[in-house]
Amino acid sequence: MAVREQELAALASGGDPPRSSLPELLDRLVEPFHRGAPPAPQVATGFYTDTTVCIGCKACEVACKQWNQLPADGFAWIGDSYDNTGGLSATSWRHVKFIEQFPADAARALPGTGPDLLDPGRWLMMSDVCKHCVTAPCQQACPTGALIHTEFDNVYIQSDICNGCAYCVAACPFGVITRSALDGHAHKCTLCYDRQRDGLVPACAKACPTQSIQFGPIDQLRERARERVANLHEGGVSGAYLYGDAPSPTYSELHSFYLLVDRPSVYGLPDTPFNPWLRMKGDYLRAAVCALAAIAVLLPLLLAR
Amino acid sequence: MHHGYADRLVTKAPNWHGLVALDTLFNNMTSGLFLVAALGELFAPTVFAVVARAAYPIALALLLADLVCLVVELGDPLRFHHMLRVFKPTSPMSFGTWCLTVYALPLTVLALLSFLPNGALQWARRPAMILGLLPALGIAVYKGVLFSTTAQPGWRDARWLGGYLASSAVMLGAAQMLMLSMVMGQSQAAVALRPAVVLLLLLNAVSLGLVIWDVRTALTRAHERTTLGGLIFLVVGGGVFAPLALLAVGGPMMAGGAVLLILLGALLVRTEIIRLPHLLAQTPVRGR
Image (cartoon, rainbow over all chains, first blue to last red; front, side, top):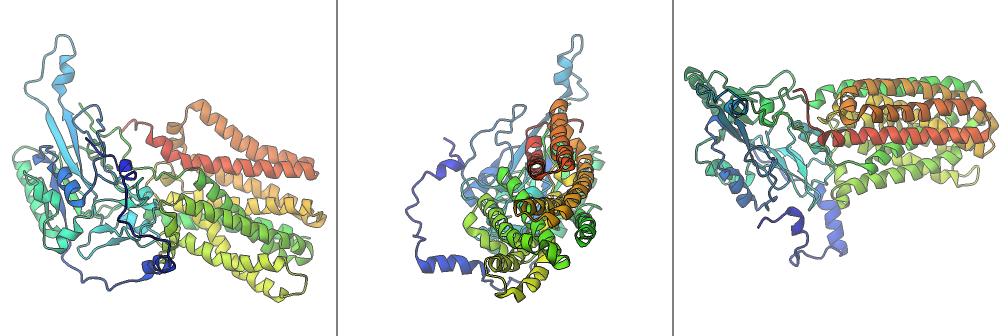
């Protein structure tokens, strides 16, 4: 039986220490301001997800939940394919998407037409996850410093710092980060920071049986992905391309990038991702001009008296 | 052909609702009231000093109401002070938090001085007023930029939202000062403020028009035509033209009614702005 996130709140938490004493309160006030020395930078790592070899087994979802001790979200059938978890959430950091593209299905419905034997259709499957953007809008938005880039150049939420303002949720153009109804904090994929620190491969990539999800130094992954695209083109899959491997005029490169064979929006990705911070200076300028214009209107009337 | 997830909104709405709309209104009311009171007292003390002394405690109460809304809206309100761990100019929320913090100091001093008898510690008024001006301006300016610097449908297109809220702050400040002047029988101040409110209301209506133009696509997707028409009628008719008419008629009761309508119109605009991405999250994307 599925355990929903909210149900956990009803469970006894006898292990939690009391938080009412003065030292406890002081510690709570002061501790967030303590900072350790940042770890030395390491080689940047990431995910390369080749959607052409994904079989939709959901081993990545299960491995992620198991390693990170995330409860099930229950079933949420989207109604037109085998997607039964709906999307990424505070407790689902991997989400396998299913797209059935079978033109013959539609043709069958028309009288006098049969299935197109030359185009039998296709399944598209994709394991979605945080994109670990090099210039991450969520990290730029975060007012507490909870969202950081780790020494592996992955985007990570420090759960002891986040206060659940949800500005990162509003900022993410990929709809990844979610504020939990249970603890009120934002959560997303950590790129298995703890496993990486111990020299292990992230749980999802480790569990993937087809190497659709590959983990490693980002430069090596990009090289491997470009070779794969070239091979696919040679093999007749002319629509194969990489999404997020390189920066665009409106968005940085992603440390979790994809090999796709249809438009990004078909996979639930923005066709042209846009970093909202590109417009911040102009927005501030317009706001300041309007405020000063209002004061300029006001002042002569005040001085006239 | 199956279009997969193309008819789904990619972004997630941040679950900001009524308290954020109230916070946005209180933000504009406190910063605007302070700006108008301080500028009035600095440049025309003989006319505005008495009203300004009453305005600062009200601005402080509005600031406290604003802070309560901000804190309660957090996922973990007991961690509000984590906002002060860093100063990040890239984050309008961080910039705004620091502006609010700095602004609270001179405002509290001025509010306390308002309760002291004339002469006691009055030398501190002028420096406190000057110190409060810049952070008050920052508070008026950051809020709209906070929304427009996101990936949310509607908000991300609202290039003039910061401008609208900033000019709205000054307009709301003048309207509150007008109300105070009338209640306190400060006719000279009221005579100066009435035309100011009229002009600022018109200026604010221009920036509101720019915001509506910016977000027209999102508005037409989120609302039926008749609902949208009704909303615009309420906002423009009830929040702009009706107050203008009441101010033209004159008299304390009419001015009071005008200020009330201005405040209700401002709250309605803010509520609709905050609701926009949440409404769109329930509406399938078309034409992709």
